[in-house]
Image (cartoon, rainbow, N blue to C red; front, side, top):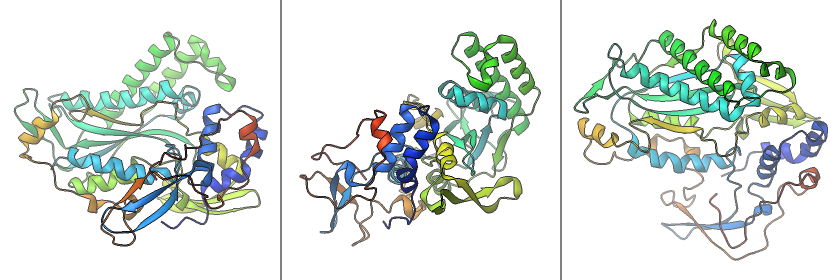
Length: 410
């Protein structure tokens, strides 16, 4: 795959020292590690491996990846592997796309309590869908859906929201029937919004009472119970945005959607335009202005700050399955039987965008897949980021250099 002329790693390598110095030691170790990994990704710093085609004699050497989930380069390969595993989990039904968004006051609270608030966002949205789906007035069935957390907007500012891909129907309470919903309608968005608001606020109140929320700086006043309750009361009086997009068609369209959303990072390398004179320009879509495509230019330190806003807590799962698609559920096979699916679904990989398969497709025969093989140490070419930021080292961020005899997947 041809390397982009400009990458997020290039910007980080050139300005990480300046950013850390400007922040005065307030950058967490977790964020420093993300900086380091993205800078070192697919350079000599992490070693190298051999990729060999399983159908022909093609072979190439490649640098190891950092495998960080915030890295723009690593997510394309991870996305392709994950999507292959999802093919067997798709049913021959239509699917819906529902988006749950937090209001701005709660989003501000999330920046200082990411793990708690993001968990509540995903759980409250999931419980909302399940509660309404099980109500006989709406569907009266157990649905299955996948939720993906995004914390950014197109301008890289903090905008936590959850994308849900929901089956257009579900399993009856007695597990004897598949109950379908209309092809152009799932649930009323006003009911989704009010139920979601109530469930989230209930969870936030409980977390506060049990000491799982804390606030500093401009939000320090929220440590007082009255101030926190006042915030919850004010947000309860507002309308919480739940957006139901146009429903998908069959499994191919769902897979194409998942390829775009599941392993997305705050900004991809393809959106970057220029990096000069201490500024970064990139493309973005302004949804408030009729989805117009525009160019945004930021000071490079502000660009790095915005990118690091979206570093997730360690161990946090941003892709989750619920209902009969949950990992521990035994209802998925029952749904397959009721829908007449008696064998695995045929491959739908052709629905993927080329970039989802490009890293693994053989460039010579175009049919084989590149397999990763361990190799002995060898002299690698000069790495792209030869001048590595010194403050990342001086501030105690350990090296993540891969052992030379162990090959990492690209």
